[in-house]
Length: 455
Ligand code: FES
Ligand SMILES: [Fe+2]
Image 1: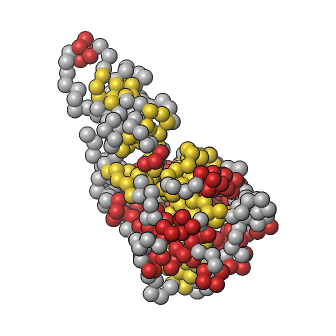
Image 2: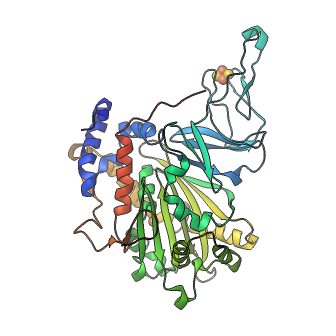
Image 3: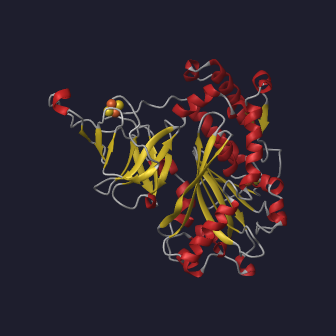
């Protein structure tokens, strides 16, 4: 056993020991989905070490604009400061720790702590203390500022932060995932439509991640009514067409492929012409272009908990034609058996208002708490979390099965000479993307992150 694990609580050690043995066999201890001690370790080892998605730059367009965001369960202020610089600052006073930001979003030049009134500029510097002379007698406060994550960086306007100073830079952390993000994010500036939609689910956060890693097998069954109402464009018997890609570092992509565009006449998810033209401006390689052209579903995760989903949908086949929707997602932990799902609707800047509104509306009516897809998914996620926290689970330590696509289990095979980064498998009915997510999770859980440097 890894010596680092010895310092962990007994229940966590037991689960990780079991996981070390079982994950290489495609089996997973059910307890990973609901154990309070394991959850605490995840907050340090997963969220204290990895780059975590904070938000999109377009959400805070003006100086002073801010929103509250989370790394693990800790609140951070995501702000554009008075100089226009984007910052991420821990929402905790440097005096005695009180939260200083009382609203979820707004515009502020300063934040004043409600406890003793220490006041910070939106750049993070401490600039005010009530009764400064009487209480502190001119003490030099100029070096005190709000804590910030060790690293903050962005790509295509997507801002990420990392608490661990020794984690490789964002570019390296994303690695091959950029090649696939280029397909769409690389086409030009995107913007968020409205505020992110968020809702609470009584289920463990990792259930959302492993689902968005690529799981069309469940679509076939859990979402089967979607074909009856005409919400899905891909025929049921073509759902496995395409690729699962284990990119590395736990990141995955799942691409559903439609028929040959030269025959079907449908390319680039049937976007309006002003968008499809963007694909052909030379910034994508021949291989990227060919995949983007024929893709009809693009879903995947950037580990640990950031996901994207991009596909044409309609919630009302008789009255609304299918339209491409793109959502960015975070599966935000809120304890071992609760998460908040955050969903951003994104579109390219410059698309028509009509497209923007329709894409947003279709997303809300499909992938949102009242959405016709989302309601299906929540049901098994709740029950898995409940089963994982049960007495039976604690006593028997049952293992779940993620073996589809392993040697001798199923038909999916590695794609020889895959043009992109990572290892691709086809057809898409396989669980290698999930195994890749879990292997990365396990690697992180076995190592203590380096201590966060503080100002
Ligand atoms: S805790 Fe913030 S001013 Fe005292
Ligand atoms: Fe689903």
